[in-house]
Image (tube, rainbow, N blue to C red):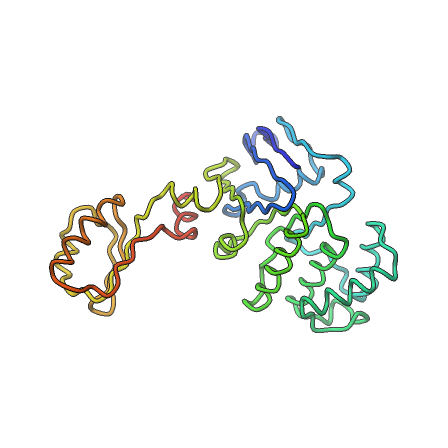
Length: 290
């Protein structure tokens, strides 16, 4: 278990993180989201004990510090070294025997579809394959805690899916995982809990379903309805966008507007699509980041 209790970090007069609190248990994934400079990397650095908090407590089992996998946003591989030499070195730091580490390396290279051989130098790999090698260095010793700073940066959708599978496998094996990303689709796929920071302050917190409920089903898509005038004049509709002559996306002032509108347009007959839904996490991110 890891717990942040009202943790803050100041650099002089600059407040990088303010009163951050969360608890993470075995086999859980926390997504830390926010714009650049929101305080995500500072939070990781406090968790890793690179820097000390100005105030508050970080509570965890001290033995955990020996079993952490960390993938920084600025990747840390040596381009002139081979995949094998680097991975065996990182594995030795975590107490793995060389023969076992080499077996794990080959297993993970196959699992993540790394294009290359163990004796290839990092500089010969594509950016995506080098990124997967760095991930192998974090995963191969079965860490208790995995910290991933922008792990999806630069990955195409196929390789991003391989990474998602690897993260979920680690979760199922009991690893605690904290990651940051600007890809809200992957946040939705992976997260047990989400914290959004803005200028160091927590502006959004909870599991994905509770976050959606905070905003309500205030987004509506209609297809196959041609009475544009009615939609434009209907009370409680805002930010309406028409396309393909008989389709519209809109934002509602509240959920009840949708019920009233449905009853009204149903008087004109069959409507193929009336989809009232939560705003996307991407929309929520943009709204809270303002």
